[in-house]
Length: 299
Ligand SMILES: [Zn+2]
Image 1: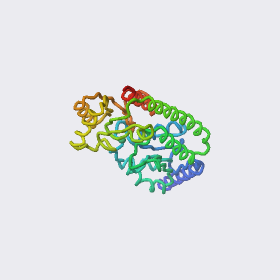
Image 2: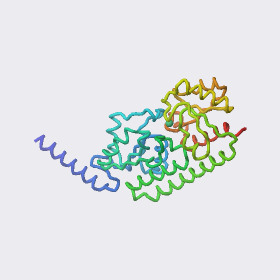
Image 3: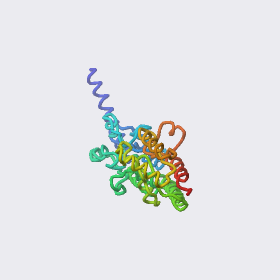
């Protein structure tokens, strides 16, 4: 008696679940998922921020990389991997930044999850830092937009309007970088790790990095000696440093070469206190621009 009643309840639950699933096919909601709008997972901070700004309140966007964690040496936990299967959309940059995501992408797509590789075709020479170039960042935002629309056609107009606002802000940022480049008396940017390669290329600066493409690439003593020599020979007054282990190397270089330190933000991740203070991609890019102005404007 008890068993058959339990079975009946189970069957009822199952039929409700499949009914709900059938009614919500527009957002690719699989049976058993809650249907309260799109669920989107992202990796790096800029991907999270752009997605949030495009989707507005029509999606729940969650970053897989916790606040303050360097995306260069981030690995997804098993628990997090399981969580992504619950998503409608998964957004990452590309193999150069998240090799783990590249491996996961096919499997997610097989399960009907829309996967957006926002840096596809934009990344050159395995340098993932495309988000720091406003023009490439804008292209990433367009890809994110296309991916979101592909799962929620109904709200296309809203997403398009949000993307439009975002594009204006990227264009303004690009103008401000160009005006800095025109005014700049100096072209050398000495920076902790090589995250300004695309900015340097677009606006005509010269990037000299202490480590390599990742802050974890330790320079040899010979490389450090060359950097000190470069700073002295070129009368470099400021070097751009970032939070984390690599700050020690920046301090060493600054001491040896007699330069000042400016704390710049690579934007791969935001710390909790920055999130709470309401910082976003644009506020930090503006602050970075001010710092570059300080270092490069004067002869
Ligand atoms: Zn980086």
